[in-house]
Length: 74
Image 1 (cartoon, rainbow, N blue to C red):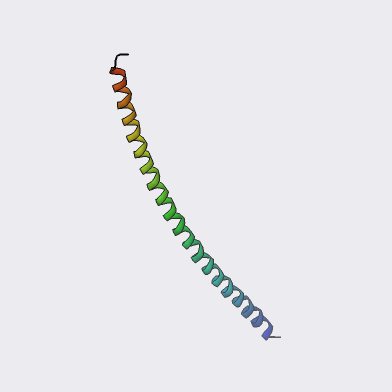
Image 2: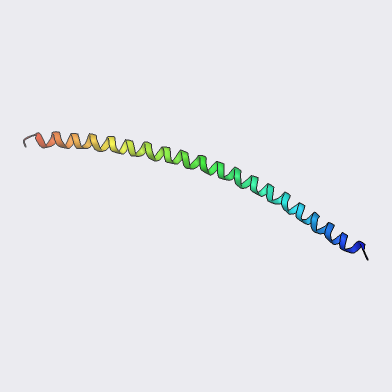
């Protein structure tokens, strides 16, 4: 009878150790996924900046062309 509480405590501790192990693995997987997504976000932000710059350059060129066309007498 006296052994029964210890068996229950031991089982509970074993369950908790297993849970901690599982949570550590899940945490590592989530951390890796977060790092991957952060890298993807950086790449996308860089691409947006490049496209914005390209759009601005094209806008400037089109404005210059339109300005030159306005100076032509038709």
